[in-house]
Image (cartoon, rainbow, N blue to C red; front, side, top):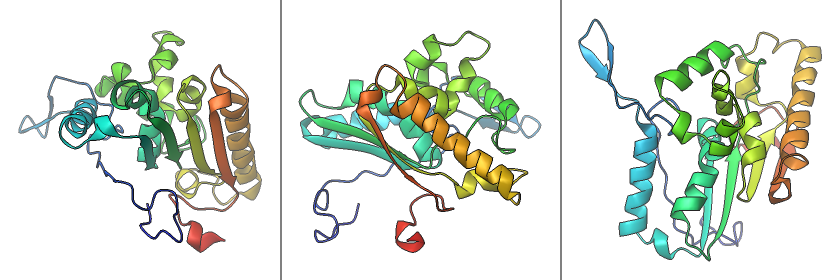
Length: 233
């Protein structure tokens, strides 16, 4: 995103749109029913997928997205998860026919079963509360039964079904993922985690799946989350 041509000769003069997500599910909420909280005094709406669609429609209709020649979708952490989720939706609906497109998720891989903060119960509850089915990668949804469609909220299960070009940026020892684990001070367990990250990425994303030839990645072994590349090398 740097505007200095010396350091960013490819995209220094590109247009940039930064979308903040505020629905708690990486632009994937599709619940038209209000959730009542605080003893009936407040209503919450989980409609992040509506927000994403409306924002992209406005960019298409009013800000020239329909004339773009090159489009990159990216995000970090929850934004990285959103990039995995919506890479194909954006490509199919909001990228001009002859434009070059790539998704670049960063630090968006939180492995199922490895993090106390990203456990199955909370992820399944989020999936149900936000009514996320329609917002997920639809090939992932179609290849899971009704009892486990929620696993598509984990990038590891969505990765194999991303049909658009995708280049992931991922630390083997992601600081945020490890901070939510009970083993972060146990180096043996940390290495097991790191090896699992690489195995998942290689088996299910780089070498596996129908679309793997469109997938690439940059791995590093430093403990960081979201960028910080100028500080870790």
